[in-house]
Amino acid sequence: MIVRQAANVLEIMEFFAQVRKPATLAEIADHFGWPRSSTFNLLATLSEKGYLYEPRPRAGFYPTPRWLAMARMISEVEPLPPWTHTLISDLSAETGETASIVAPAGVMAVFIDVVESQAAIRYFATIGHRVPIHATASGRALLLQYSQEERDSVYRKIEFKQYGPSTPISIEAVEAELRISIERGYCQSFGDYSRDLAGAAIPLPIGDRRLSVVVAGPEFRIGPKVADVAALIARTVDRLRPKTTAA
Amino acid sequence: MIVRQAANVLEIMEFFAQVRKPATLAEIADHFGWPRSSTFNLLATLSEKGYLYEPRPRAGFYPTPRWLAMARMISEVEPLPPWTHTLISDLSAETGETASIVAPAGVMAVFIDVVESQAAIRYFATIGHRVPIHATASGRALLLQYSQEERDSVYRKIEFKQYGPSTPISIEAVEAELRISIERGYCQSFGDYSRDLAGAAIPLPIGDRRLSVVVAGPEFRIGPKVADVAALIARTVDRLRPKTTAA
DNA sequence: GCTAAACGTACATATATGTGAATTTATCTG
DNA sequence: CAGATAAATTCACATATATGTACGTTTAGC
Image (cartoon, rainbow over all chains, first blue to last red; front, side, top):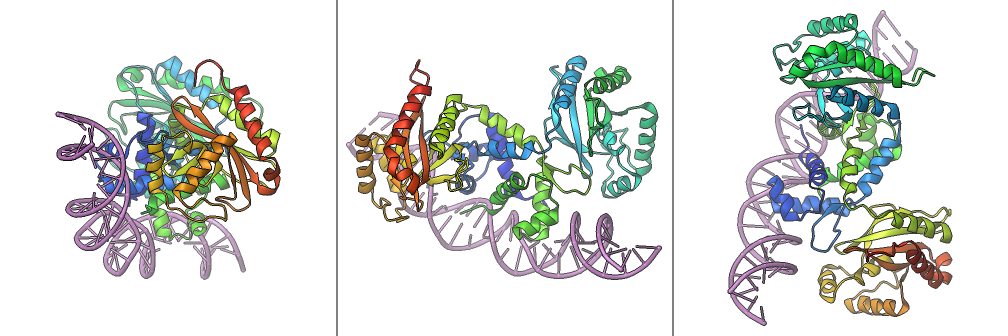
């Protein structure tokens, strides 16, 4: 069950992140098609809690810097080491595609850092974007770091859907793909989840965190050179990852 | 009316900002005294929207960097000029008290930047903290920048409460205090809103934004030297504010 | 290696909550 | 400066929603 008003808070924040200027109650209500009275209650709640204010009289609401302060506190804990961002920047620059760092979230994989391609036709992904862990290159690169028991536990919760012609629709299919990935030396996906989308990924354990790096883009561009892309990822990781400890 | 589930989202985030480590469903439910099923729904919603993930298997949830990404987008718009933070840092250092930048939010004043005192006994304020605009030094420094009509419009919405012995409990009382403040050259408050708390504030218009700076601390420390503190604020603003344009 | 306790998940139901309509307040227009 | 128009706010009621209860799964203790 989705908690509507919780989702609405997130939507309001995303709205402000997009328009980047104060908005009045009416504007917000109209934008979302929400009743004014409900919008009023929501804005009042956010204001009362100190997350919204009125920068100029009658010019509407805008989030207070409190969001930033809180987000900073939260993200200061175990931030990704800086070289991982360099990693995906470099990968994106060299391949011209979108590169991301991915982490597990139950049966899904979450993008926790993204550098987007500059190409007109590109894989559009943002931080927080989620994809099925078993039906994507990045997700399978995470699964490779699990023990058999942990994988089984995940499998039990997966609802196998045929997202595309090549989607693995059984535990065996996924396990088979994982075995092939190990031999191949990297994970790949050709429209397993999103149509026309192809990607190459490799595991990226950092400390005790299980992450992965992925480069993804339109099938027609990535397709012919997956192996090259995968090799590039591996080389770039080798180059950037600090040699000292295992971390 | 307060939207409970909207408030809960904020509480969860504040919780993570405090504990700074992943938490399981059970921990969160117990912490807030929420039913597990409700907590489950909330966490599921936040996860589905890409704001929560599971950094390590079975170690619970933690916010994704998406919060940070969004907060950054939002705060990049018209950030406070850097000298305002220097301003309150310097003020806090020199006075040993808490210094803040304050903005209006209807009948309230919101702290939008804070540098806390290092003293054991100190004014504890955080970004997002709200106080009544008419019953605080910082708030009245905002009101001084309003036209008479704008002030009247605010007054109509104020619920005058006797927070302390010196709280102004009528429009006339507030207006009188404002007139005195103009003569005096700064705004002050001695427990008008919070017991034992005293502060000195001056208006700080930046561009078309109406802000104020305030230095506040325990009455026994600030009391004897309000005038000095106020003078220091004025001098420091003069020193730091760029001379060029009016902004 | 087994048992018990803790944890996570699903669902039906009573109730807390969102909302349409009415009221008040602010803004625009001639 | 009215009168009109639009926005913000309030409130009572129907309904969408939070939660008690029950079930399956995982972890910890012995």
